[in-house]
Length: 118
Image (cartoon, rainbow, N blue to C red; front, side, top):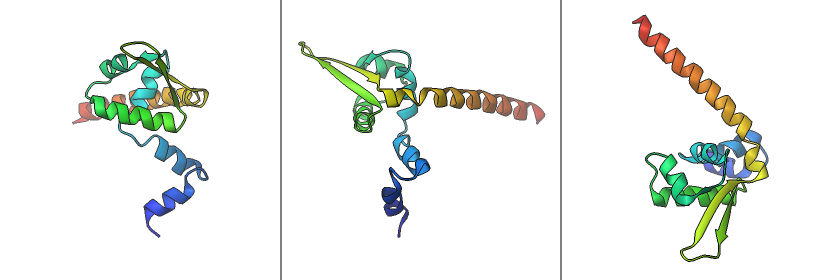
C-alpha cells in the first residue's frame, strides 16, 4: 500500500492525517489568518498575502470552502461582489494560529541567538 492510498483511507478517521491534508496548501494558514479578524473581499485578501497569484488564491479558497472552513458570499450586483469569511469550524483553528505565532516568534528568537553565537 502506498502513502497516498493510506492517507485517503485515513482522512476523516485519523486526526493527524485529516489536519495535515486540510492545512497542506501553501497559502492555507495565511488565508485563515487574514480571515480570522474580519470578512474580506477577494482583492483585499490577495493584497494581504504577498506573492499569491489570483489563480492560486482562487484554487485555495475553493478547497477551503469545500472543506467547510470558509464561506463564500456572492452578492447579486454588477460587477459581482464576493466576500469570504470563516465558518464556525474554521474559527476553531484561530487558537491554533495563536500557538503557531508563539512558536514562530520563539523560533525567530532562537535563530537570532544562534547567529549571535558564531
